[in-house]
Length: 137
Length: 209
Image (cartoon, rainbow over all chains, first blue to last red; front, side, top):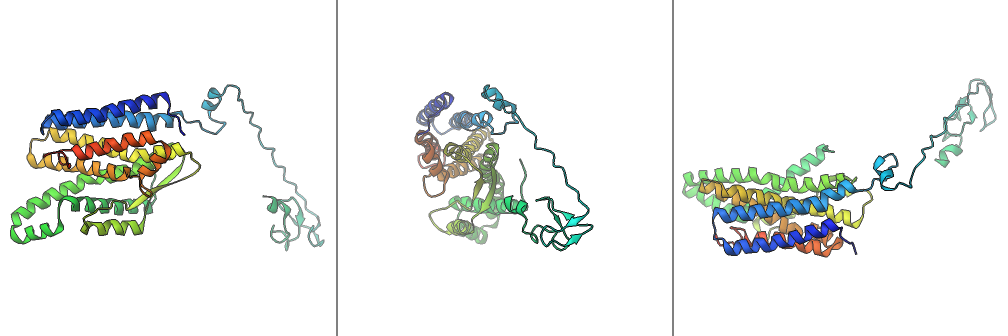
């Protein structure tokens, strides 16, 4: 079962007290603008407190899973994420060779960006040469 | 954060219109209006003016209810939007002519990973906003110098408490179910708050006006 935070428990008590207060106001005041004013202001007060404590405060305090968020490291001082940048992709450029799929010699062939293989015009697309890199992704 | 798709805007407009019509049918009978139109046209014009004012003031009740769900969900990092449920929208529209009213033309759908308490908090936002707006209109009504204006403000606040209580009922996909699933005491607090306000509102069952 969910355990309420300390502020939420206090807000709960304030809320219950305001319900009792509302009933008392109804009993003590006759139907007049004064009664409406008191009923309205008690309602506004209670709803604002409950709204702030139950909705807005947890929203502000919620732990964001992104390691780029500074709050995350403040909350967990032991957690220091080291961001390793991805290795820069060096594109292999080949201008001559034979197609890795059909073996045909190709002077101005194509290098597949997924598997880095060298292919002829006909088999240059990943689907045409059953690309391993595409399958992996 | 405050972005809406064109479909969402259209569906919000339809949903709000259905809500206003259903709420008006609670207090003003369409048959009575027609009779007034035939018998006393001057009285009908006065009545019509009050209805237009009521309609305009009732728009934020439903709109803010749904938007509060949407923005709370977005505040918790979820993707959220209002979607009209065609079956329930038609059922709500049909309830204008029935003694029992249904106000559920659509629902705010949220996607993403969230816990049970987040779902409860998102569901709490709507009824709480309605309670807040109802309270504001109740305070306004105490300052109204004109009788008809006071009644209009009281009616709007009653509409607001109606919507809050209806949504707090623990049935089907209503907000009450999700809050009850999360935390019983919180559900009892908000339910009792809306029930007391609904019952003891000056135009309520035990209001005595």
